Image (cartoon, rainbow, N blue to C red):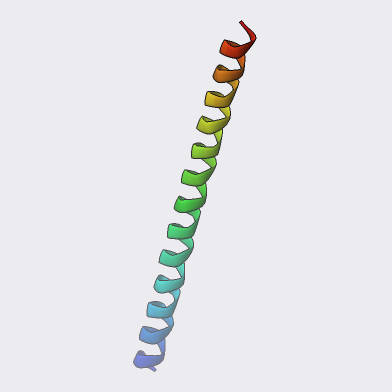
Amino acid sequence: MFWILFWFLALFLSVAIIVAISCFRLSGEISRQEEQQEEIKKMNLEKGE
């Protein structure tokens, strides 16, 4: 019984870590895309002037 609980806990922790890493990467990519959009807007404003 103890080993079943141990493996279940280990599996749950590994899945939670993978999900956390993927969410962290997604948030990083989203912030990068927003920064790129801001840079493009600045370049367009400079070209307009």
